[in-house]
Image (cartoon, rainbow, N blue to C red):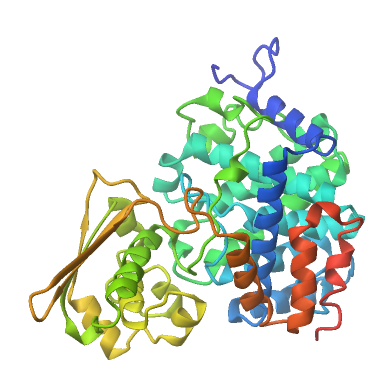
Length: 460
């Protein structure tokens, strides 16, 4: 498909028109069973992450400002009794879902798919009292739009410095919001245009609190785009392919036809990873390799016995997480060296391990100093190899082809429930958390999504 100027011939529908038509139809089309299952799991994972970050400092600051700005009570702040307008609720909940770096990931594009999409859909879903099935359809559509755009523009868009979850998440959030409202294709095209002109976010923010703010802002912008389109605000209807539109500014897709190929038949959501570790996903293969070494040799392996650590990874893992000496907890979640040291010394890389470990701990520093990390272009980003040389000359090695949590090695339903409960119990009583998990994993059966907020309504 040849990208055309917005004023060019309209004999055949352009990509913006085709995507808008898909979004508009999603509300009325049942998803295949495996897609529905994946969406329920993704929603439960998102909810757990948002609940786990209720007391996070960055979330608290954003919530404080949002409460000051909002006088409406139509949408809830996940895990709290606070209520806000839909735009600000999407902002706060989008920040919360990403704050712990535990949210889902579409590894081929490095997009956190549910972050902005679910925050936007839930905020508007509460305001409009939609069913769980409508919310689920909105989530599926939003993820499809943002990740298909990501597949078209990655890696050039990302390498240019754009925070891809934020830029394309804005359009994904708008798509989800349009499904919730029930906009027709014409209004949806304008919503995509309104979203695209708000899209932004810099990769420079990945090691500070604005990383999560980027995602919250994408969610709120998506809600605003749908509401403005519903109010008949117009925009460039062919915003993707128009001159000075999204592709013109953010990068031309390498395979434009792939954007709409099998649209509505093949779904990206089934390719989404649910993280077992709260850190950058490029680090996960190395963590798995270390934990396997500890599991097999744990009775004899001690951190003090390690003389040298050699790790071979895809070069992008070093680009994104090559921080030998992180200086903060956030930076530690984006440090390959810190995660390897943590996994070897603690035998864990879960949330508690990351939160309880001080990045300047002498044992962790010593392990990081003994480490050599090498980029290997022959390796896939999902692969890693870790070798240990012990003081007595013993060499131990393990390789990973696909990390746990990936589509090839997905979390079991039991593992997802355990993750949810560990996070949710930071905000809720265990019995309440258990009930809420049941509602989330059975999202498609809910008659009204406001049943979710009732589970945390008494939380102050």
